[in-house]
Length: 349
Image 1 (cartoon, helix red, strand yellow):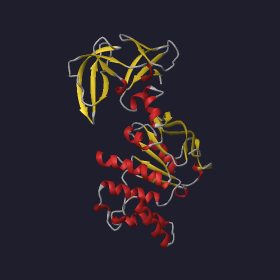
Image 2 (cartoon, helix red, strand yellow):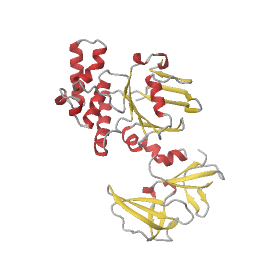
Image 3 (cartoon, helix red, strand yellow):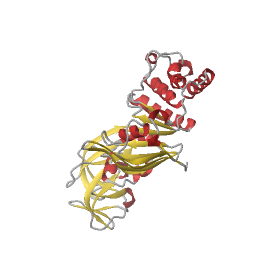
Image 4 (tube, helix red, strand yellow):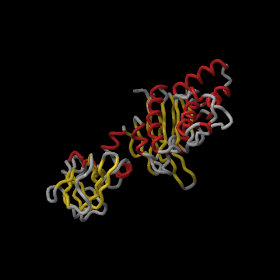
C-alpha cells in the first residue's frame, strides 16, 4: 500500500467570516481506510464535499490518480458518497435500490444482474433481495446503502458518519463489517466521523481536524500513544493533562513538582504532559509521584476506572486498571508512571 491515490494540497474554503478549511494537506494511499476525525464544525464534512464535487475550494488542489479531481464535474468523478441517512428508495426492493445507479448508466441488463448478485452476496443480503427498506433492520439498511455505493466500483468511497443512525451494539458489528468489506472489495474508503472509537477501530490512518486545520495524520496506535498537540492528546481517548514548564527529564508543574517524561522538549518552554489512565499505577500513599484521595470508582467492560483528587491539580486524575479495583472512595493512594508512559507536547499547539 505505497501508491498515493488522493493528494490534497493547500485546500482552503471560507464561508463569509468562517474558515471551514485552512490550508489542508495530506495524501491517501490506494486501498486505505482513511478517517477524517474531529468535533462538529471542524471542517471534515466540508472536505468530503470538496472531494465529492459539491463544494469548490477557494485555494488548493486535489488530485486522484495524478489527475485534477477538481476539474471534473461531480457526476464524472470515480467517487461515490454514502450519506448519513442512507437515502434508500422506499418503494424499491433491495435489489432495485442497488441496481438503480447501474441502470442509470444504461449498462446491459445481464451485467447489472451479475453485479447486483455479486454485491448482495458480499454484504450478506442475498436472501433479502426482494424486500423493501422498511422490512429491514437498521444494520441491513446500512448494508444496502453500502452495496449501492460499491456496486458502481468507484475508485474512492466517501462515507459521512455512516454508523451514527445505529444503536451501540449494532454499530460495533457494522464496524467489523465495514472493515471486512473494505478489505474485500479493495476500494479506498474515506470516512468522516466525530466518534474517536469508530475512527480508531476502522481506519488505517486518521487525520485529526480542529477549526479547519489538520493537526496530525497518523495510524491509530501512533495517534493514541504519541499525540503532537494538546488538542489531539485531549480529543483522542481519555488522558490526564498537566500544565507546566518543560525540563530535560519531564515537566515541572506548579504545586506538583517534576513529573517524568522521556519526550524531548525545549527546556524552559511552556508544555503539557499527557499520561493515559492505563499508564498510571495506584499504590500506597507516599510511594509514587503524586498523592491523592479516591473520589469515584466505576467498573465496566472488565476495566475499573478510578478518579483521584490530587491537591494542586484542577481535574481528578483518571486511572484505568484491569478487573475489579480493590480501592474504594475516600482511600488515600499514591500515583506513579514511568518516563516512557508520558508525552510532552507544546502548550500552545
